[in-house]
Length: 209
Image (cartoon, rainbow, N blue to C red; front, top):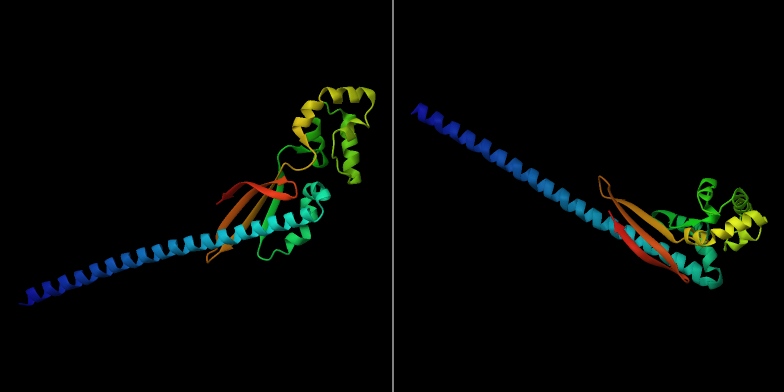
């Protein structure tokens, strides 16, 4: 009888242990599922916040450019300076912007200019003079008109190529908004490429990660 009772107690003990293991596994799975659900929720909220920041940036740019359509090109050309203070006031927005596309002469370095066909040392010096004065280069003819006959001849021989490889205003502004939501913070990035269409910034590509 004692042996049978001991066996029964041992069996009950193993059942309790087994149930504890199963309960622990279920609790762990539940916590994991909750964490995944919470993480997905945080990413959705973070995406909405980042998208909202980009939309506010776009509205800001459109508003500035449409105020004076004759200056839309110059606003677009120096966008990071034109709207810097306003962007800083976009509460809760971590925004970074940069230019992509063809080489902008007003922003080009000596190495970039030297790699262009037809850009003699004299032509490069003229570009740097415009840059040092803070004067925008809105046409290649501004450079050509200040060259000596020999440099002008070389410049003109590659004029078509220079037109294809360079631009006087940004082809594309890339804007990236980054948010962190939850605990631990879940990062969310939204990157949008904008081109100018008259007095408006138009979206050409939208990426999220």
